Image (cartoon, rainbow, N blue to C red; front, side, top):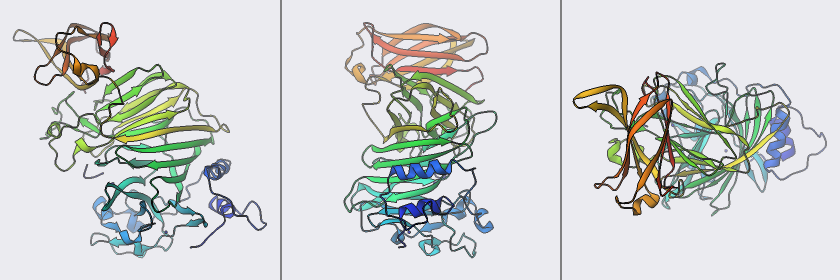
Length: 516
């Protein structure tokens, strides 16, 4: 979507205390210590013992009033990039302004120690749209982006971005930015309103010249919690980011969202574009939520742009994975030569260790414009967050385009609804449901095989269920009629079997009379 977006050596012990806003813990001559994730953990845990405060200095008015186009006219000078010409990775920085008002403290970690990365206006080009203003020498940065020769050795592409609250985005090969990840979600879609934690400090570990992995440490802060984070970034066709974190609650949190993923879904083939006067058949960064439960079952939930806020939770124990997926990779299904939705990455979250009991929560928010990320999903632990009880967790985030691994069997590739006719007459209160499956063993079967559909409907009735292999594209189509029981939503499930063995993931959908 077109509208979406550097030596003063110091000792680590002294730095930790200074960055925390107080005097050194030990007034004696400090000793140099290795900077590790444990260092960040101590820093975050100590901060959690004090009341929360916004540590960012106020943004000058001239920058706060920038429009989106004016902010985009501030460009980083590539020659000023951190590690430019010295490593495969280089880091460029974002200026503060527009809605990106908070300053983040940036540091470089090397064999020489830890140093602050100072702001300088000379690192940026201020285009003609940017009003002239005197900027503070210590204005600081809003965030940063990592570059790496991802697609060709001749050019360092954007690989990963940290900008705004706890948001970050990452790309695999031949992908363009779409959905976002977040470090944490607190009370999302709750009556009292959502609390947004912010990354306040980052430490970038200087890589060796040919090193192909990058380590980033960060501290997260909010009124309710602080957190220590470590990101191990491994670029590739499917870029991996290993996230290791520990949270330190200041107060109780009833609904905590781990590994949140935020995306945009305006419309797809399941609803068509009847609500939108738009030439494009589909508009979305992701078309479904995918999950693998602790028992091993694969679930696929097509996304919806609802008329009213929808919140659903899929209860589970020891989940094996969850992700926001862009499964449709056909340009003709989007017809957008600028946005290229078919190149948007899918994010798959693979928990490392036992995440216990809880559920994957899916929040779908009504939206009339594609500039809004209106879909979010995350894991909600069963036990609420309690003060003075640290919570460690880790996961592997995969940014990929196509994979036969997630899921390994047949998958739902399209969902459609329509009216039901009895001769020339429309049958009121009934809907035609069509689900197309492909992949896995399905691709080796002929139409003569007795493939069957296992279908259930909670809140309604289905009949006239048929399964056929379409000759034109070898897709297996399930068709059925749905009759809701009243005006309440209907939860549908369907998967294909052969001789009692499941051939596909389980397609699940919530149909509502209010419309999607």
